[in-house]
Length: 156
Image 1 (cartoon, helix red, strand yellow):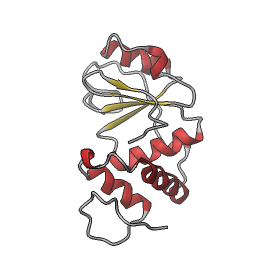
Image 2 (cartoon, helix red, strand yellow):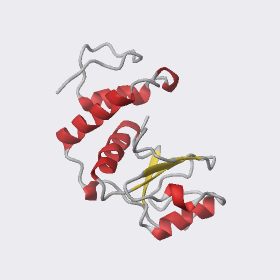
Image 3 (cartoon, rainbow, N blue to C red):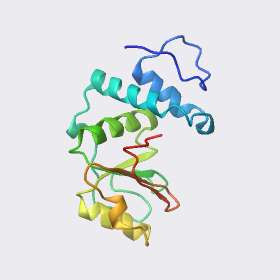
Image 4 (cartoon, rainbow, N blue to C red):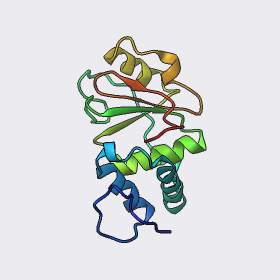
């Protein structure tokens, strides 16, 4: 399955597979990419069909004893994705995000992993528990402590 690259990308190829489309989108100027959320979701679903995301293939987060570096080696400067690995849509979106942006930029935390969530809340005091940790939901915590909820509805 192939499709044209996003209109804001400077990719030369006429058609891209979902994997390449997601990476081209991730490398593009985000301010020029505000109106392609529907296309992004279609590519994420197509990418999941091609690569079959498996629950065991995506990390779920662990306790983080060092305040500067996560146990998995990802620095706190990474965007923390709090997600529900038992929800199909969350798995598709998280799989696409992990592919597009890589593990050096994203750290995935299962919303049921209490020790990982507690470490996150210790690192960013004042973050609310409820909008971050939702069944069937995805939230992002930026390195400066700002959070974005409902990413499962608006992944862009």
